[in-house]
Length: 389
Ligand SMILES: Cc1ncc(COP(=O)(O)O)c(C=O)c1O
Image 1: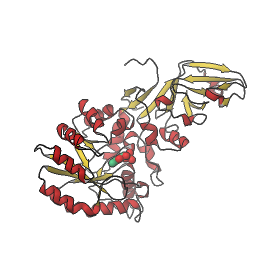
Image 2: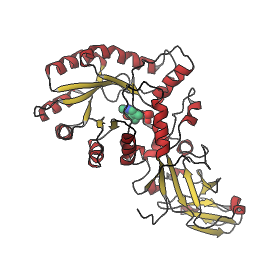
Image 3: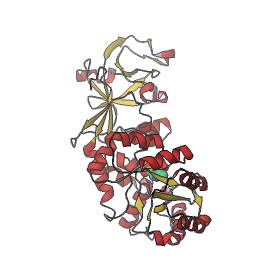
Image 4: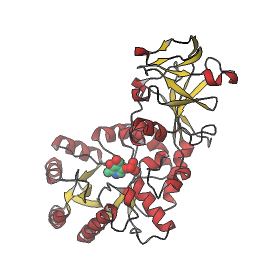
């Protein structure tokens, strides 16, 4: 692919594989593993991520939409694709036709699948709401569902799951996470005759489990619990007071790069960008970087965010534009800065380490790294690198 504009997201597959293997190393091999590749693989490129995971022996992956599942299927992904979002009858037909695995979370999903089915066996996972109050059957309906599935022989119950909403309290014996796990544990024996896998651990849950074992905590996680990691796989540990130490165990997979398309000199008192929200306090040297909010560099980073040039952090100045942002190069002009020199917005490499990651951008923006990563726009090319950096 020609990069006419040298602004791109470098996707380091070595980091992805090493994050995967760190996660795997904390669970028995036979535990269910379903990396989440929804939202374009958390912004990294779902096909790139899915192909890499498949080559590493992963055979289940999670998406939200049927559309996402179709896209992966068309790209040749052979794994079982779990579709987490609900669907109507038309969606049920597509799911059955393509052999996707629906995560069923309400009665009409079962009805749509029954109506759409033409005698095929349908593998499903059933989701219970243990406190998130978003998707899933109430726990008290477990026996009724069991009965329904037993009567409707086309269904193959492969998995039972719930979604943790407050993994940060995972080590608190009286916390919400333990409460959710206890509710799930009530449901599981009801479906014993189907021998489903049981899965629930998102990134926060994974770290809670690892920390509990490391700290020999009173809290014990059921050893067979299945894992659905998202953020951690992409190199970020969710912020949790017991898990800070784990950030260095995983490496950010995406590095957002651009370059200095121009260097300009502005006199003291000159304003930069729309509405002149930055005015030079002295004669200054500024860099024009061809990447903007239409690429996913949030405009609220204007006059707040930093970028890295020659390994030094310099500020974004003035309002970020749709296609450009400007930076103040004045403090680092001693480094022989030249047009076309590289600019790193965030990521991880030997220059940056962890000093400027999507988590830093999230902190400045008052949001979470999930949002920064998944906001990366489709017009930013994803460029694969395999090296360990
Ligand atoms: C159902 C489900 N499981 C797992 C995950 C992965 O979560 P995380 O990125 O926190 O690991 C998500 C993400 O939103 C999800 O919706």
